[in-house]
Length: 162
Image 1 (cartoon, rainbow, N blue to C red):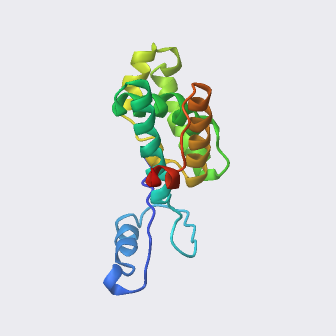
Image 2: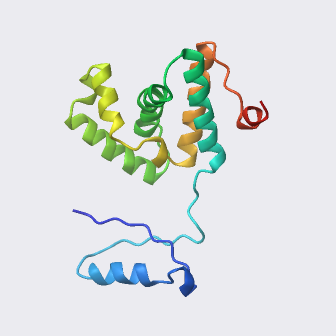
Image 3: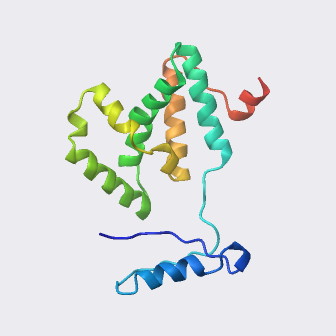
């Protein structure tokens, strides 16, 4: 079993310095490891992207007379998960997709009934672990999907000004 971790190392001791990385290496000193060093902080999705998703889910729920929970679960299952599984460009996206697809194949996910698939996906993190690029693809697909249903989803700025 591999023990994969990402460390953000700030040389300032007030921010942890090198201690977490040093402790990890000391605990796993008997293993061969591959280390990739990248300068700077990892890119994270901004609150704008997360906020936009939340606003859109609320809008769709109101338009359809459904709960936000049901809409969130639907977009997670039908729109976001396929992006995670098949829209991969980077090595980390590919690695995650391989793991997800392995697990889903083991449980026969693609052969399950809709309600069963929803129950499975409910237990997984999907949009929260997407890369910023994948999240943008997902939001674009969500916008197109609901536009075809006659629901116009505004930008976050438009939503805030409403």
